[in-house]
Amino acid sequence: MTAIRIGNGYDIHRLGPDRDLILGGVKIDHDHGLVGHSDADALTHAIIDAMLGALSLGDIGHYFPPTDPKWKGADSLKLLEAVNQLIQEKGWEVSNIDSVIVAEQPKMKPHIDGMKSKLAASLGVEADQVGVKATTNEKLGPTGRQEGIAAYAVALLVRKES
Image (cartoon, rainbow, N blue to C red; front, side, top):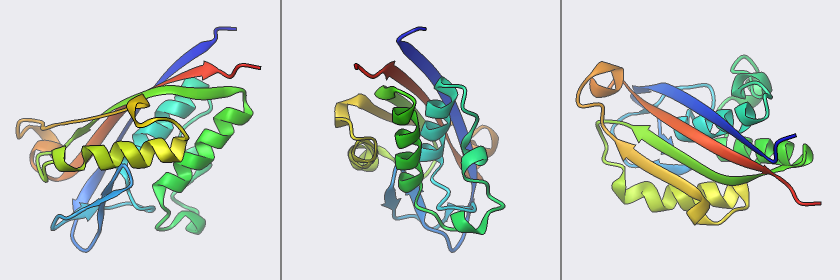
């Protein structure tokens, strides 16, 4: 079997009033937050899906269904830790993550280092193993109209050394 696996992930959540905006575990000051069953952290959800996809383990909804009240308001970094534990039990570990947030507002640059730090801590890796970038959608589509925020992620997993 190959000693490396790669997976990709994507998530998008609507923006709505009276919600915290949390991305990569960082609470960002904004007049709207992401709407979802958990904390709606689209970046962390995309990373979870990338990790699960690398090992053909399904998606985030399989493990943390939005129909289960147990996950209502859940901290997505805790979900990430659980998925990381799962991949480690299967003999794999994160080599690196690369991700991009797509949002018109608010500006993400001031929060990127905090996101990298929190994500890395949840994964038990160094911050330089977690890439987080941000871009706009040039006012096109739902993210461009500020209806939501999307995130894409790629995870490279390597077989743990015995």
